[in-house]
Amino acid sequence: MTRPLAGPQTLLRTMNTRAILEALAGRGALTRAELMRETGLSRTAVTQVLRMLESREAVAAAGVDKATKGPAATRVGLNPRLGLAAAIHIDHHDIHVVLLDATGAVRAEAHGPLPVVVDRVEAIAALLDECRAATTAPVLVAVVAVPGIVRADGEIRDDQGPDGGAFRAALSERLGCPVRIENDVNLAALAELSGPIGAEQPGFALLLLDEGLGAAYIIDGAVHRGVSGIAGEVNYLPQSPLPAGAPVLGHAVTADLALVAGRDPSLPLPAHLEAAAAGDDSARVIAAEVARRLVLIAGSITLVLDPGLIVLAGDAAHPVLFDAVRAAAEEFDAQLPLSFAPSAFGAEAPLVGAVAEATDALRATLFTRIVTPESSRT
Image (cartoon, rainbow, N blue to C red; front, side, top):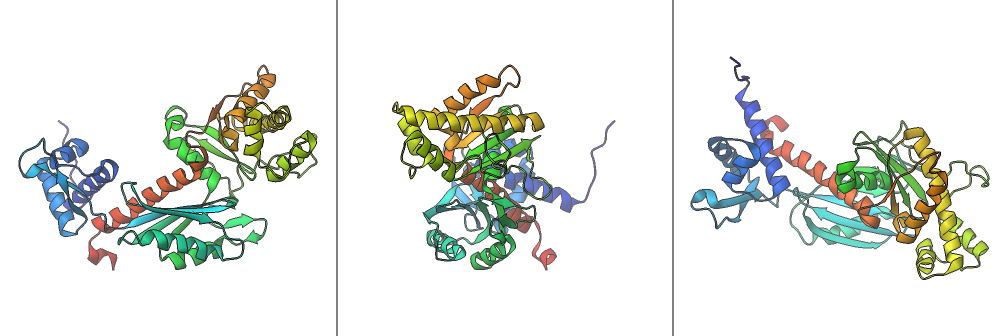
């Protein structure tokens, strides 16, 4: 006869509490009966945990299930005043700030241009303050998506030298909460992992084309960053006939290709792709060359990591360029078959990834505070 495992009642209560908190965070407001089904806990256990959570003002009434009669019909949800998380995406031109609660629901958002002169910390803080005006809950954590190399310790290494530690410290002090810095392409890949692509592929590579070209690798359901965070810096891989150290793709490369094709070099790549979609032959030449370079990068990645799928994001997901990539890949199909898929989230993929990571970080922070008695925190 198998006997049930015995353990301290405090551990059991903690596990039950976390199960209910996870259910409320994942599903939103629920009745007691729904909590029983979600967690597998008894009515008594659910009732006891809810009483404790109510005493700590961690949950609040959130309407009534009209199909159910009696006290059990009352829905309870996480108290929205517990705290919020900030998901922030900084690209080469703009800043996008989103405030979220523990269910992942957006409570406020703001966006504005990335200033050239004004301190970027103050620009971010100003947008967050704009969001804060719409809510009374405190911001407890922030996840910031940035272009460039981000090391495992959250420091940014870019062409101007290592300033990530200073930036993160200054931002954390100004926002009044812990800040996590993450590479934007890695977050885009995490967004794809949480979507339909990740449901089918536990491993894939993502190529994001914007001002430059960056890659991210999902291996066995996790981001591969490398020892120093440079995994994915594929825009300087040698590619004939380019000179060593030259970027493969990006704004400057697009301008050069446009000059050769007889088009306006000041136009961004999406403008050329739209012209190609409208039938412009010179624009199609640009699209074909960009696609060729993307395929060579994808082939190099495949020879090293064999990811099985290459997800194209940013400008690379444009229908004209996506079709051009698949056409260019056919040339190598006999020697190296390549499989491509467009991003499920488009240009918003880095922010979607930041939202998911910020929500997870908020839940971890809140749940630890809720289940840990006040006396144990001091």
